[in-house]
Length: 208
Image 1 (tube, rainbow, N blue to C red):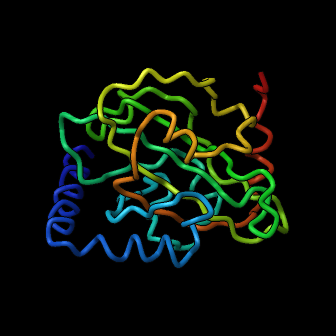
Image 2 (cartoon, rainbow, N blue to C red):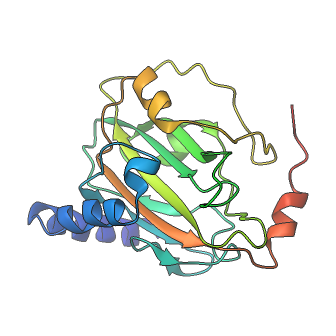
């Protein structure tokens, strides 16, 4: 599995080196209004994101189901091996795109990630899959990677995967506070309610 990830990342690095990944990513972010709904500047490079348990891949706005994205995905981006990164995932469409009064919902945040080793990073908010309420249509689920200038002393409330207190989070303010700059890579999918959403809600038992 490690070899497979390494090969995928090598292919991604070659694509980025030839400048083929920059334009489609930023164009998709702007066309889908992630700029300015979530961030001010679109990333140019693409994060390769796969969900091994369901064998699906995120592809700049493709539609996936909450069932397919229940478990933590695997991420791959053009990385400097000695650098540290912050990875985040957010939904700007909470509770719906037409009425985003809870914008944004924090799905996943990991800081001080060495290279692409998310397991060695500092979990600030553990991964929670998509749980769009019934009847609210498609939500955008956005992944972003920031290259840190150095190790960051994060001062955040650590959220377990059982904690649903994640609404009204502003990624731009978070990034500005920790001086992370603009995202270097990104990707996103869209999802709407399916029968697995109530099961996800039932896991939210930690509200402290």
